[in-house]
View 1 (cartoon, rainbow over the protein chains, first blue to last red):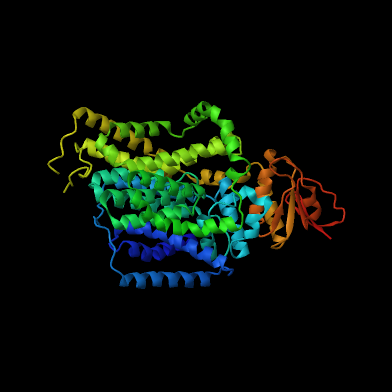
View 2 (cartoon, chains in turn brown, orange; view 1 turned 60 degrees about the vertical axis):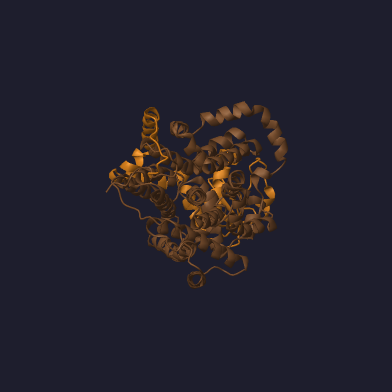
Length: 436
Length: 152
């Protein structure tokens, strides 16, 4: 357990330099949350780069590389003009935070109760990490082998390489406490949720939206990439929303970088990049250029994946013929999706809340709504294109996919409703005057 | 508050309050809130054996095979469940995890096609609850319900 905790603290410290380089005034939970996510992303890039140049991973080598990168970011960005958010409002605690804290404690105990047990952990995410650890780097022969397509060789490697960082720290493979990383990703996202909510609302709505987001930020699928994907993806969308609404440069930078890391977690993260770009294309086309860091971050993996010809299961065979075959069954597919929707009452309440909010507020949130809708279209579209039995594919993935997109839309609906309850119709006003 | 702001109609506010409370209530996870206060040992024990429920001996067998083979060795896994969806996929995936670093080869793939060439070419055969005639292979080890054979 010590090694995992040391790894989490190391990632946090490693990421502080990156956070402050993007936003010099980041403080409190927002600094904590972004630092962990950046630390995790940076260690992924170090291990990926190390492996790509053909060096064998070693703890000493990786530590030196991390220190060099940390120092470089720190000293180089210190000399540049100081980028900072326009609104570094402090976060104040509230008694509702006790329930949030209790949820997180319960989750932490659950996530670390046993060696990781999920099938997809030991057949995909953990398997790759363990194989790479034995190999001392990314084992391209394993990924290219025809016998290992079950491990989804085309999936990006941020999570397996984070597991490898833990394994390097503990001097060997153990899956006993890796669930703690899941907890860290969830906590990091909640810190960001609380920090951002505090910038645009008073303490009660900020605490309420954090409590509501708590069970969405922590993935039920321990050891799988859902946890980090939700963390990076939701944080990216919320920062970009903040950047759009409040014209905040620091939020744009955070959003673009986090989006790039989301694309390095799962293929759905790459789809999310496209969804965000599509939403911006409708709302503010020129702003798409501000997403360049996301593209720069995902490019190395896309190039490596292409050069090693790693197969994507959904693209095997004739995708168009499968889509054409299933199109006449659209009613059946959508009915099946509706029947298999996880937590339908929650989604109904979110939809109702969205419709109840004043139109001016709904229009204001069009970025998050459009991003969520486009991502949803991608997910539903994948069931038309899948080479597997569509019912099986829905049954084994639909609840995970809806979990991935739930947090940002819930965040905006809760804040809209809080403002409406407080009798505020202007979208730019705070949800409630600060209680002192 | 800006002057342009105005009070939202009461009905909308009431509906908003109901929707807000509903969303918050539906997102509270009683299981997680209760988790710190319950006896977690049975849950931990259950999840600890969850991947191998019913075949708890199999991971011990794989661990023993791991201890007797080296990185880069090719190994095929023979089990009684020789159809993909009847259990071979589990055995193959599980072996790939426990025997990371070795080259684990399947005898059956997801289309239920047999790959006898893998049986012939692999350096080791890890047979669990299945009697493989040694032929020109040497039995390296027996135990945990199976045996490990090496091609001579």
